[in-house]
Image (cartoon, rainbow, N blue to C red; front, side, top):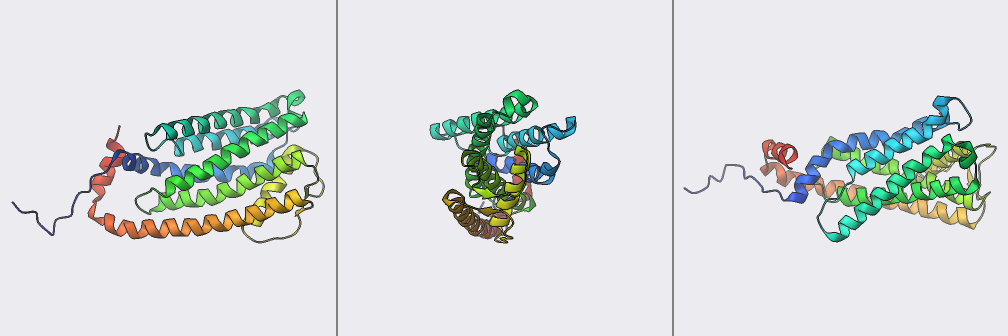
Length: 261
């Protein structure tokens, strides 16, 4: 019997496409955990009460765990396997390092804070790259995918703040921050500076004061502009592709998401 031209076709999904579909529900929690450090950092204080001391390690650990859940290995190549192992190792070390602030004798050593910031910066930059790679492979645009795209922008600002904090530890007075008396306050101010720079607001209350800070500010500004441009292109291309995927009915998507092992 000849196929009915009016009958929608069922597109076959390969293993990679099925994995990506199953990851879509992780984008909204990823956005929430990326926002958490921004929202609660003002309450962090390593010398304060029990809850204040737990703010940084708890929110950073949640962010690392959700990043590992959202950005696992997609393809089965040997290179991808090595990359995901490095990504997981960086995440474990970065999350474990944030708990060192519960040990004041160790945490208040300059080298300890700088090492933890370096690990977290490397992990966040790795996460940003993996997120762009994942978004470039999604098959359709929906609320969850848009949440993942928004999480990427939030993630970029957070990454900039952590990298700026690392630079400030390596080269003190790189940024004019005003008065601050602890690591958490420095991190909070530089996360704020990162978002102000990425959004091109430029209030001028936090300023780079030497070539290291100036070059970092330029790179952050360029990176944020490129990310938004890339994001718009990806979303538009996937939206157009979504029109073609109307041939794939919702039942096929549900089977791909829930039935893949």
